[in-house]
Image 1 (cartoon, rainbow, N blue to C red):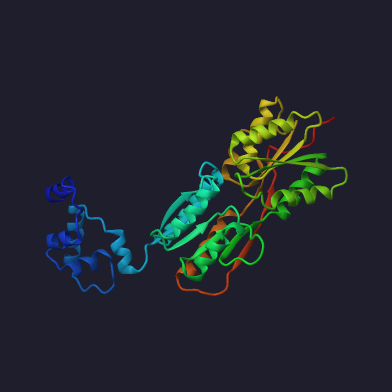
Image 2 (tube, rainbow, N blue to C red):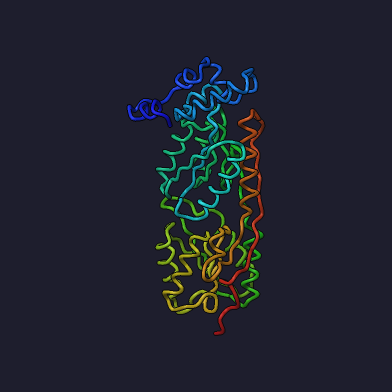
Amino acid sequence: MNDAGAQDRRAGRRVRLKDVAERAGVAVNTASTILNRRPNSWASEATIGRVFAAAEELGYRPNRAAVALQRGRFESIGLLVADLTNPYFTHVATVLGEVVERKGFELVIESWRNDLEREKRLLDEFADRNVDGLMVFVSDIDIHREFLGRQAAGGIPVVALAMPGAGEVAVDLVMPNFESGLREAALRLYGDGHRRFAFVAARSPGQRVGKRPALFEEIVASLPGASLRVCSCGPTLDAARGVAGELLGLEERPTAMVALNDFTAIGVMRAAVECGLRVPEDVSVVGIDGIPLGGQLMVSLSTVVQPHAAMIERAFDFLWTRMEGYDGEPRRAEFAACFEARESSGPAPLT
């Protein structure tokens, strides 16, 4: 940066488009046309070069709000997730970030930190921020029907990544279907001799646990001689360790444990070690989600895998078409999950 640009910075004054135009010896409109690379510029190559050189020398950065007002778009997408300490959400944010970047947009991420009151507040606040569309992992569709209805009626485009709840959903919806994957996992474990199952259902205070435990319970109930304990815990690793430790301390402990998500399953595996048990020789552990981290653990985690990339691509496609003016009926996309057996599951221990 030259002396003039440095002086402006030290003085706390933002370098303006007018400053760039004066330095390059052109009109403000000409500088704006060139810097925004609009196709209606009749400037010569020499003039274009002078404008970009002046912007670089002065350290000019466009005012995003002004650009948004001019273009009618902020060129940013909002993403609301439950918990950034859970690697599932950081993985999804990374995948979405790559998709958004290919469109020339930026991704703005917020976490409701497993706090339902914070979730409600952030949903309302996010809809009023400088974003063109919003993708949300909501705790419960039914809780947020009023918000989703408002956005569908005239707010910013929203795509929900969640199970549908009761009744119709006012916005586009992308969701996994775990039935085939959970059935595959249960049958594999059953075939390996497991008869005592447990399901560790992690959830935030006040949050409904969703369909996964009930679905797994229904599947296990169809297996002759099999039994299932369903236990709830908080969304943290410590909570999962605590509940899993209690289950594994029972005289007739479960030999196969399935967790609501991979994050919880990691806590279950840790609890097994603390109880002096080996995974999978003494207890098999299965997660749900298919986060990349699961495959890199010392004992790689068997899991019911969601097709993350395909789901995110579809969700962004739904959002993009809404942003481009599509106003048809709400769409729904469902993606089947599949079981991937790794090192954390195996034959039941001999009794």
